[in-house]
Length: 511
Image (cartoon, rainbow, N blue to C red):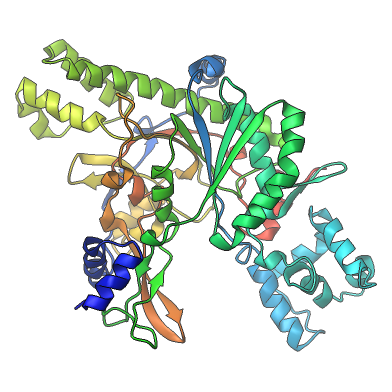
């Protein structure tokens, strides 16, 4: 049971008693698998690439976004620690035996290609300050000082940097961080009629000042170069999105003072940051999913296509909801909305719907359309780990389009495994969102979260095993009850950097 002091601690953290009780129930159930019905495929949940249509539509991009406030929302709290994980392992080995060059293949690839990385020159200069020659060190295979000056406070300390502030790309006479590439991308599609480009970065609290300092250095240069004004905001995950840690017996885990222990609620907690934005269109793209500017033209085409499709969706849904607000509709009006659901949203209405009266059908369709909207650009799967778009069994709507993570699927069920293995597509590359209704009023996005899609995992805390709950993922459970459209986009628009060696891909290296 939660004591009075527990409840006080929970309230001080900004967590409601209802949420705390829900977390207790979740950790006891441990895991609820998502029931996937079939993969989302072309013509059944996914729109294919139609170059002629896309080229025609994006010519109208400027007109479609006229008068609309657009914000580019960039989750950027990811630390570079995992990006350099294999290098940290090598560094630990070398710290014990500096001649132990028995590395994993990925480490050998890193050293063989070190001069190609954008951070090579800063690393070279850092070593040079202590009279160390990087070329000589590489030649003699003395790798310990190289890793030390790359990863630790001895040198660049990149192992403790956020990804957004790392040098990602090298051009002829300058380098750009991931954050800079996002600023440049925004010039093409995230601006309004007043030539203002708005970006919102979610960052960890310990890095806020570093991000702000970096922006102060670089923003004036790009404002002058592109003739625009940047409006850049930052936010952190609010403590109220943290979750309570539990022991393996499902009781609240306690510290040495018998107080509750809280943990960050994961990526899905950003739904609260999204909820706090005021914009007509929000475009979401992860901090590490950028490419060299010379490869950006095709990416920009499909970003504009996603935004234009969203604007069309907003206009059509607003038209129908306004019609419903005006009063009773005819059979023809209802049929028109049903056709839209079938052809644009790929929805197969439940059998019970067709037994409803005309007024009940109108009420049902109103509820169905009166939700936040998102248009997701998805790519063909090519050996990338992670989730995918599926049709999912939905208690509320019968079936719905969802992004489902692998950890949410029961792979011991052969039917579920087969459905997953037949999926053609991968997680969203870009997401364009509309979080207002047809009257311009903001939705409360928490009302559209599927709270049953939490993740429960085991972690170590003070050398003890605890159960840690993560909030429903941003693409998955956090947006489970949104109107969703999937558009196919080329693989060239997808260039994430999960490990440092990903920066060796052609999208990141200038020949």
